[in-house]
Amino acid sequence: MIRVENLSKSFDGQPVLRDVSLAFVQGKTNLIIGRSGSGKTVLMKCLVGLLEADSGQIWYDDRDFSSLGFRGRRLIRKELGMLFQGAALFDSMNVNDNILFPLNMFTNMSHKEKQQRVDFCLDRVDLQNVHHLYPSDLSGGMKKRVAIARAIAIKPRYLFCDEPNSGLDPPTAILIDKLISEITSELNITTVVNTHDMNSVMEIGDTVAFIHRGALWWTGSRKEILHTGNNELNQFVYATELMRTIKPETRP
Amino acid sequence: MKLFYHIGRYFMLLWIIVQKPEKASIYRRQIIVELDHLGLESLGIVAIISVFMGAVVTIQTAFNTDHPLLPIYAIGFATRQSIILEFSPTVISLILAGKVGSRIASEIGTMRVTEQIDALEIMGVNAAGYLILPKIVASMIINPFLVVASMFLGIFGGWLAAGVTGVVPLGNFVYGILFEFDPFDVFYALIKTVVFALIIASVSGYFGFYTRGGALQVGHSSTRAVVFSSIYIIIFNLILTQLLLV
Ligand SMILES: Nc1ncnc2c1ncn2[C@@H]1O[C@H](COP(=O)(O)OP(=O)(O)OP(=O)(O)O)[C@@H](O)[C@H]1O
Ligand SMILES: [Mg+2]
Image (tube, rainbow over all chains, first blue to last red):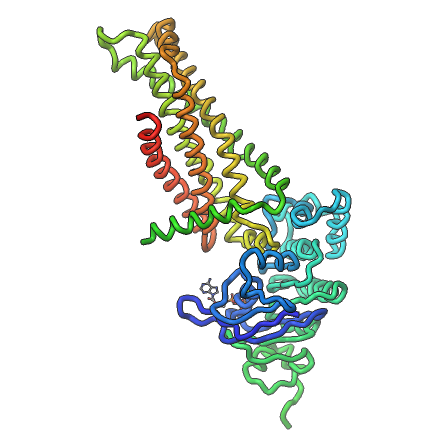
């Protein structure tokens, strides 16, 4: 469970997040949706401390992240995995070493145990025989899957994914969504996913929070999202012809 | 004002860098990797420049000290002193600031703009320490070796020039090379080298680490790393020369 209370953030006097309060539930895939530039990435970076919020509090279960110093934060970060919008694999290492890296850094496993864990994680994201490849040799979807494998290598309690399926073809996008959702319930972790893809919302959105111009506009489940009277959210949900064809008549 | 901001942030970064490493074995392994990247890969350029500069210094000294009151061995002596006291520690460090400094800044800068540093931080790794400390340590270990190699090769270049051009008889030249040799001179040169190595790796690491933006800014950072490392080397050369020789 992660809780955010009254989070605000501005850049050079320009507010990007306005007084956001939100909770992310353990064992569920929690989605943050919103249009491009609405502040999803900034919100996620504030959650993990890559950006410093101007005001507000962030709780990891019963630990107040915002009041911790960098040593205390480092302890929480060891329980946390993140998938960046651009995958952020280490260029200088091959796939195997990328996934080994957190294991080498933070565990005292034997060499054999570590290699087994790497193989397990790669298998989990449905990748075989890529150990020796470098990130520049991988396709976009493969990079994201390797990044997921790296993020789950040390069994995180909290998983953050920033646009895990942007730029991928629909079957691969769904595959990655499903993967994140399965891992979440398997490991019973708290997962937060940024997306602007309505397919993801309908596939894996256990809880959905809609951010509009930096403010929390709406929260609910993926079932409720089709029947909301909220104007901005409706524009977002029914932006495509495809979605409009399944639009239920809300008003007689 | 901007200057004080940078100096303050530079020392704060140094403070983060020297925090206790998560796992010493990983840092040790990184140091070995960097010894290769930053040291051995520079050996070629150091060798070429040293041999040629040694030759040029000898020929120049020979032509400019053509005076009946000056003994001929003075040419060898002056060549040795120039190479050991200034050329090898300072000029070679400036060359390394260009080669190694730009490499460090662009490597770390690229990791910054592609969020690889964020990925490290998220894992709970001290990214600044992990990326910069091994480079500083490796430079401070390997640069003295490069400089000692440069001293030998520079003097060798001078000897070669003397032999080939005949501007000075080899016997006199070698006598001058060995004339009143004081090991403190080498010690002084190595102290300077170690300080310059610290400057090159930490200043370049600083500019790389605080890169913002994209590929263009990585280029800017690497240029700035070279410019500022060179400036600080020149300034500290003056300060250390005053402190150690006077
Ligand atoms: N470092 C920064 N400095 C200044 N402004 C920033 C910075 N980072 C983000 N912003 C601004 O914050 C706003 C929200 O950006 P953010 O990256 O969170 O959008 P997003 O919702 O993730 O969009 P997308 O779906 O396109 O990724 C944008 O207007 C952006 O210009
Ligand atoms: Mg974003």
